[in-house]
Image 1 (cartoon, rainbow, N blue to C red):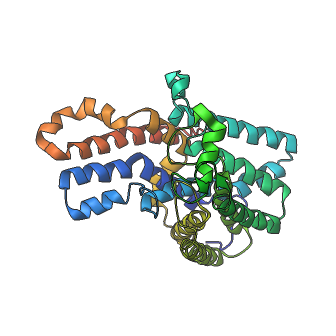
Image 2 (cartoon, helix red, strand yellow):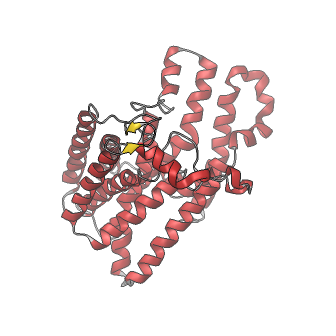
Image 3 (spheres, helix red, strand yellow):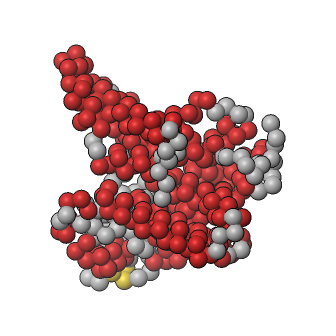
Length: 367
């Protein structure tokens, strides 16, 4: 195997990692939850808890899902935009493509979690979904890739972290006092309520000012994509990915002692720590697939990853375990408390069958 990336090579680890991330969303969280309801042991409960978000401080394994989504989007930018420049597309054409993707992601976010399909303004939320966070991180990171030199992009990454950390700690919140990293005294949440008004989602998650964090997370993925696209040997790339991951994770944990890790606020320490985990996951997948050439095991992940947006949207607007229940209901008398596991697996099988059919027919829905 050639030890350096060729222009025509596809980074299989990125596709598989995207599929791994989607697998957690469309299957693993519900599977471990229903499994725990059946088993009811301390071990199954601890597994299930890893697929739930903490109430506020700290982090669980499930918290890596959204950062990994943004990270992978960023990792693809150096490949997709470089290809467009090589095809002599004008910058106007590139801008149109970026804006089109931004709008589509925002609309899909409304469909998935903004209650657009209810046709009820009282239930509509302007900004309340992972796809919309991706839209913000994607367009700003793409513009940074087009206009800024590499060192300037690094400075932008640091600037996003520092500026957002200051916005979370320095401003005064009317009627409360100085902003703090708490659900009832965060300036970021106050800003959301102020700007979005009646269309705010009313949750403890923040969206507008955390755009600094979304951009930083996407930029961290962009840096990884640039590293993979570089002329370094593949072994050096894997080693660098691992070292950067360890460094980011350590920096996030250390900074978290003074600036706590809060996923709901997307704090700067959370950006560093989660990006570190993303780098480590990419290093592992890259080493196994793109260096060792072991790719067959990841075929199901590739099927999911190549149509990740389709999988995400369908899994949120169609309850596939309920669909499976129409077919598998006769098994409930035999499986008892484990019937939820059965319908979860069956529902995933239906969704995967659709994705496999699309993959086998080379139908890839991209935005």
